[in-house]
Length: 227
Ligand code: CTP
Ligand code: CA
Image (spheres, rainbow, N blue to C red):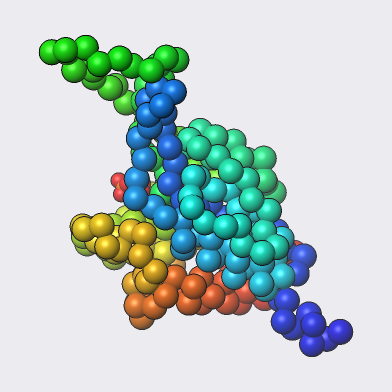
């Protein structure tokens, strides 16, 4: 019995994880998206569930199978993702690994936009809600631990630190997503964990290993939290 609980230290804890890209519709057949594969977020959801947490995975469109023991909510747009996250609250911890589109098309066409010779359509954009910042700023029902990601192609630590301050979250996992097509979508990740205490440079390792290490850190955090 004792042994069992030691292996499932997150039993009784509920956690929210976002993962994947969002798709922002242009018209019924087109959308704006990004290169996120969802692998890192899915690996985190799996690692937390392995440690006994009840996990809600709010996922943008991916090609991945649901991790075992995780409740998955599929969404497309950033607005849908925010609504699904709010519906999943309250949680003990929220980990925002999704690559949420920063902008959506201001007015989605309800019919397919037709090609007209010599005329280019123009898209006006609107800013999407910042899900991480919204949840971090909750005065009632804020998760005890809010973790954001920072996808950077340069000045990783500096940009990550700025995000930690700006978003109001507790930790930022900053990663180098590269400038080619290699890193976004790959199986490995070199991350820095930024907390109020400082910066940790984690070795380059598989996304599964990053997920297990992060889940272990989250476990340590909750060992000191009496709720
Ligand atoms: N995020 C979010 N909602 C958004 C945009 C980002 O929840 N509309 C979250 C991401 O899931 C991630 C963190 O915020 O955890 C940082 O995302 P990132 O794209 O790196 O930061 P931005 O603030 O959007 O800044 P920029 O893209 O300009 O670097
Ligand atoms: Ca962004």
